[in-house]
Length: 404
Image 1 (cartoon, rainbow, N blue to C red):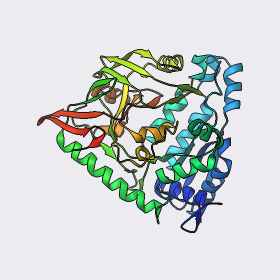
Image 2 (cartoon, rainbow, N blue to C red; image 1 turned 180 degrees about the vertical axis):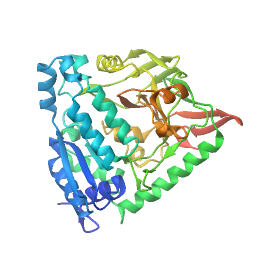
Image 3 (cartoon, one colour; image 1 turned 180 degrees about the horizontal axis):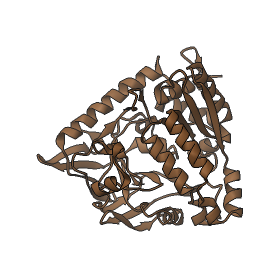
């Protein structure tokens, strides 16, 4: 059993998730969304949450083969129906101010191969929207990658979980003397970058690189976020671990150009490779890929807001994930290896007082509404990012190196 600093590696993982991720407070409730493939890690996270003083921890299990059964035998209407009891549960979670942890790491990206793309891309729209609104408001949340044999096989071609653990431990700073403190330090650096971008009052940013030339307009007064966040009660937390980005939400109607996705994308149980998109008037109008294009089109057609961007993000080559030099086949990790954008839902906190505004007010400002939020990496060798604002054109990233 591998130890780091006197603690079992899984214990250190759980400690970072609970202390630096959601920052569980005494008496707080916790939900843990996790695949059955993560049982051992889930147990450690539950133990760490109770040790931190959680009043209760509720695991919510997912499982690929069970999902395939639902997609195979249920109608699209059944798969998308909103259940009243589930909405009430989310409302109570929000009122109580619980902490929400999600363990990621797809154990089988091909589990839905051969199923109806529309059904595979489906979600319970009302429930998903309610949970997204809760996590953007009162809930502290974090998403973390959990190693498993299936994920390791995607990365290395064999189920070498030990090798994957080594890469994940490096990316998550588990090798630091105090990983939670190390993340607090990194979060401060990213927050400083976000403040610098805010001061520039940028009106648009432009990504340029091999196969990519994309200009995206920004909402006046938009707020850049980097590192951690602070909830309504003043408690700090990290929504993602690892995180190496600064990001904001753009004006949904302003993206123009082309982009080439530089990392594989696992989407609804299917692997997407070589994805290329064309955007006009903010909308994704053309989709092509070496494989998996139908899965992308199905998701984009599943929601009225899916074809518009909800995030633009900046990541440089100094991120630990980028320096690892491997493709993690996991969006949480790969998006932090390079600049990325996301189609789907915007972040209401990307505009002043956005959390207090109604959905209609957010839309008027330019934010996008969707039940989806899918990140795709466009960064890599040769990527350059510039911003335009009152001071003219400012170079932010040159050849994947932060220069601002």
